[in-house]
Image 1 (cartoon, rainbow, N blue to C red):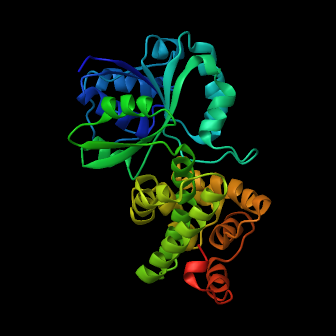
Image 2 (image 1 turned 120 degrees about the vertical axis):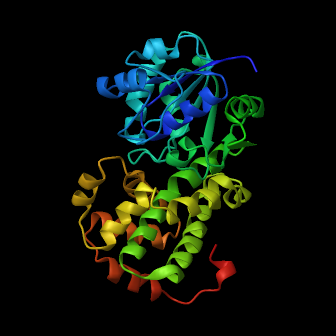
Length: 338
């Protein structure tokens, strides 16, 4: 395989983990970060100890503080940043790009102010002439396990399947299997909304409710995700795949999951501000819950679990009371409530 330069915007755990994969595949990953300490550590010690403790990075992984340097000559630019920084970084990217390139984003969330998916935000901020294609790379994956080279599967979703296949070819190896899909909307809805349900799973575990409650929460949570996704143009089959049920399972059941850990602390009685301070990293489900709560009302879509989690997060609703209200809802036929 011909060696290709790939720029990765974001020096967090996922950006660094993907850089490791690219280096394993004999490509040239260049991570763009905004903190001297992390950039210097990657270049000098070949580690990123804050985000991926105990992982030694291949020497081929480089980092830079210069966005221009990172994207210059890159075949692909991977955007691996928190959703709350997407607009400002994409404005900078639009200025830095001199040639059209394939953009790949791995960020999972919905913008609260606009209800836009991340690909829509990118399309607003990066000129069409500078985008060969826009691919969503998503699926059940913790950066910590990818960095350990544990078996992982993802899906590259794009309306242009040729571009999705290029991304597939750059990342696929014996540790990371990549599928392709043309349902961008479904991939983004599944990836974003599962973080809300993972908060709920953590809350349930924090309350001590056990496996029965969490299984019910995940199943009915997927019904809500599918309901909204189909309403905005997704293929319902996408939610049975890696970016749907696959991502939901891994995020709701793992201690690696920031959203599960945050929910777990909430379930044990801590308030949101305390939890976010302790986490020290972005918890995407909190921002997404705010966005989807208003979006569902606007579209008149019934999402009782999302509404309950929103109330716990932002209206000081008691978690046990929220569960009692969910359990006491009127009777329904299951197949009519998807």
